[in-house]
Image (cartoon, rainbow, N blue to C red):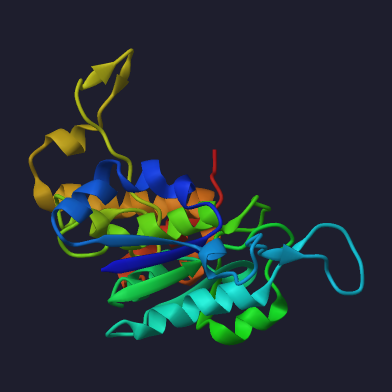
Length: 244
């Protein structure tokens, strides 16, 4: 899978893209990352990419010409990449959206800066994504989040292909608790069921703990998750008031 990143600060990505899973994905030929400096698509000698906003106001706005020129330069590729603008008004980025994007052969991530990009740039992208309801200094941090979440779903990137399936949000729920050695750490012990060797019982325990965690910490996710009749029955027991 190919990721194109349009940014004013390509150096921002150097270390993250050359570390751990993302580097291994490149070494295995599963991932490619191409960083494009938006300043390279300006036409003036000072390589200006921003200007004052019409109507007044604080800050600067990224000009449309270099951003759109960078996007159109990628049209020469054999297959036009899917264009994404990282934006606070975009659709909320979720695991389900990451799964959908992982099926595309190439993505372009447009990183805004300053007070944002000229409104007209939105006419040249395929979608807008937001990674959350908070303010970032630029789209680069958001782009890295998208890259990481999507990359781990690309075949050949993770060492264990089932890892992405079992993680939080993969089925709409938070992940079940995880334990490793030692079995007793300062009086905190690993649940006996996980040491029983009974795989069916372990699977049931993990499912119920995922439901419990989601119910306690992110109940909003339950309305969107795919639940079986047994799942619903278990959640109903959690919802009952304690007596005693």
